[in-house]
Image (cartoon, rainbow, N blue to C red; front, side, top):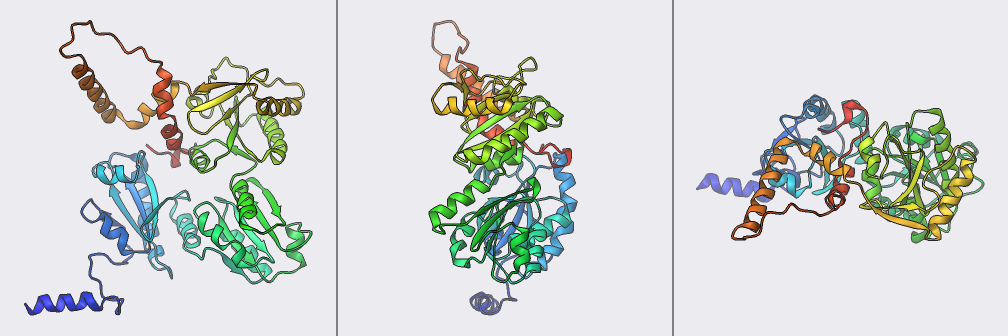
Length: 432
């Protein structure tokens, strides 16, 4: 009885004495192995938890595991420690379903119990550097020119960077919290003419948006009211022209604008790069759209969903709603080699005038999603369909008739999850 009282007493005073724990978890520099019985408790025990949702048969998961093992002790030593945990999401399907895990490995960071997709690097050193900034203040206050330079270098190239030069922290604090998962935010309070020249600023206060990975910069001089600042931030979260990858498709889900999508033969070809430059030139005057492009050779399944084949004349431009519908513009079905800048302008004008044909995404996405699901899942789906079909036909005298619905119906229903699953093209980053 006395031992029970002692345990109860420790649990009561534990909020006062931080070194005493009333649960089975602690920050010890090791990767926690979780299951359904302790997952929720682990997430609620720490302010920041990076969770690896893996499958034992997944080759990419096996390659990621040692990187997480190396990163765990470094992250546990931070002022605000980040705990790394993992769970076999293939085995513990209830947890996988709850957090919409449909590819392996999937990483999510839980901040005070709230999950956010992790889109940063996966090599141990880069991962640690990234998460150091992730748990930094919502708005970092910079006190010198060198502080600005160090902040930009530490933030890296994965996300846009916003610097409020001569701007009060309160002007962007609420929006910094809202968009923290997609960008870095800071305010520079002390700076010199050198900084003004570096960012080509005519005056202050100003909000500078940088896309280091795309060598892009935009400047906002006000008015610094929430609705105007938010519009600027929203438009600058994506570069002027966005290459379609698994990661960028996830970003597009958060953007409400329609996507001017160009399909080229090969993104690496000189002609394609020159056309992308023309798209980038058109983008600033058409901020109500997102301009994106994809190479047929780089992602054939994606391109074919927009009624493109190897015999199609390319480049081809369409307007995509980001989900199941895209629009062909009448008279601008493909772009010819002569005066392409004028053809881009004409395409946009005709779309705004409503000279369009609405289309559903093509059935090629159906086959692609099945390839992502894996054979075991496919067998289960086939079995369930067969059972439902059998139940529906029992007791009927009519002969069996095959389903004659348009296969694009099925493709449309699965298109969003397919786009969500597609990973970057580098083999080391792909999901199984």
